Length: 153
Image (cartoon, rainbow, N blue to C red; front, side, top):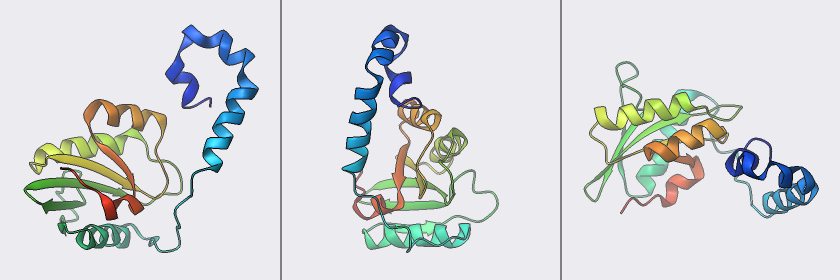
């Protein structure tokens, strides 16, 4: 509520946020409880293994995915092509939400690798700052489970 909802509604509704805080928390809790969380056991812990894992998931979804070189990748871990579309992916296997630096890297990598879209893939969610920057730049923010069904058409 404090990190996501209240910054979105802004100071205009500050009084309402104070008087209705308990009700708003109940709504957020109910919505959060209704979401089935993905399983984490299948995602590798190691960063390079996580990149391979994400590339394999994209390949199973019909993408021609290849990992970029470890150095000089300009922010891309995977470049994937399908149906004339190019997706540039930054992978982050972390224990805390991903910040906006990864979104900046993905946005730059999209241009460098001539991508149609860019995405940051993580197991750990994203900070509000990362979400705001992604909305402004068009970078997709995905959990690795979302790679199976990604469709840019």
